[in-house]
Amino acid sequence: MASHLIQGRTITMPVRVTDATVCSAMYPVRADAARAVIAYSGLDVAEVLPGKAVCTLVFVEYRDSDLDSYHEFGVTFLVRPPDASRARSTGLATLRNAGAFVHWLPVDQGFTLEAGRTLWGFPKELADIELRLSSPYKRCILRKDGRLVVDMLVRPGVPVAGAAAATPLTAYTHQDGVTRRVPAKMWARGMRVRPGGALIRLGNHPIAKELSELGLPKRALMSTTLRASMTFGTAEAA
Image (tube, rainbow, N blue to C red; front, side):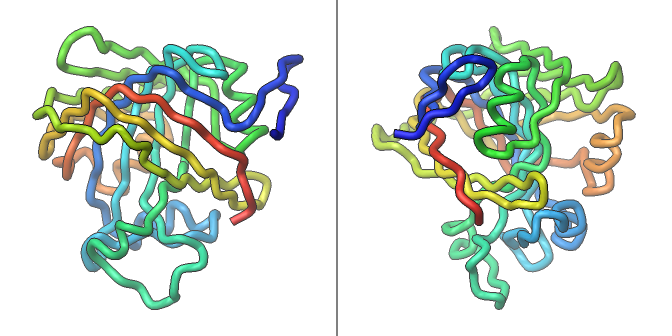
């Protein structure tokens, strides 16, 4: 069983998250614009419709995990596996094999920042992340270097029965010229889903400008809230 020393602490793989709240919204964006944003990774976006990719904004409260408790915000894109056929396809077949490329991942604690970058190459940065999760309306206010990046509100959706089995997930990261594949699993409970359902206000930070160039704010395809347990395995070069 692989282990790593982070700030004097031994972290054993896989890393476990016992309890987290995850709120997300998926947005349709121009595939050519999304390709330009993640070109540095060498990956290609998955087209859910001809010319359309998916950008997902997600905020998470990790209450109990091997990396302590912390808040996180993510900007991710659905991507095709690196070994996928060069011929581009669209629709459900593309989504079935797609992974999530993590483009930006601010957190509010130093230990998870170092662990995330060291273990998996996640693009973690320190930021001020205020989460308001006590009501059915979930809100995240993200500031970086004293500048507003995004103020995001996710409305309550319709309960969805979740399966007891783990859902396998694949994340991709890129750091120091290397693109990595990160295997993960998630056990979801208390899931709520609705079409649209998210409101965002962009600030004046460069990441906010990047999101605006993708066409945000706009109506989300769908939004989701859930409680989750997760595991993150050892990263491998993609």
